[in-house]
Amino acid sequence: MDSALGATALRVTINRRRKVVRLSFLGPFSQGRPGAHWYAAHHALARLLSAAANATVHAYVYDADEGEEVIAYGNGRRVGGEKVVYEDAELPCPLDELDDAAFTRLQSRWPMGHLAYVFGLTRDELLRIPRAPLARVLPLEGTAAGTEAEAMAGLEALLLGPTQPRAVTDAG
Image 1 (cartoon, rainbow, N blue to C red):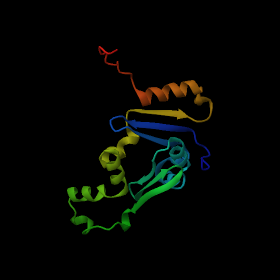
Image 2 (cartoon, rainbow, N blue to C red):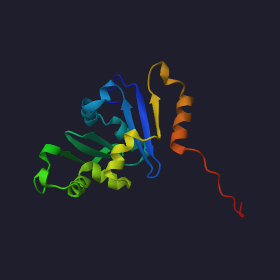
Image 3 (cartoon, one colour):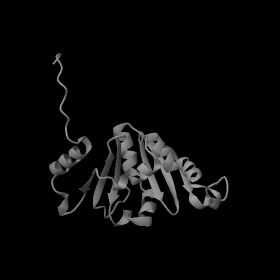
């Protein structure tokens, strides 16, 4: 996985309303600002998932102090992307002259805002997904990894949730 040495877990977080699944590595290499830079260079999981699922997979990097980037993968290849470095961002006027509403509109055109739009979320909702209550940490190594069956059961419960009873009709 692109030299993910020391990877200890995979965190799976979902937004069921919009059917968005977020995967992130949990380990010393993926924390804080250095973690954002690590993610900027490591996209093997996104490439592999895009090929295996025959779907577009988005990898993103968000550093609240520095910038944001979204890269799209399809069929195992990069198919798009955009990056904004905040200090280089083109603003319609000096930052101190922008009101909150104008700044929010501006952010909606930046990579994370556009990705949120694609998913049917607000930018704030997208940025909050890592802290969503619907999450599961799947250990990748060590004694905490447990059995594969336990991991699959936990992942299935997270992704599918409680099963809803099917409506019974006269047709059967």
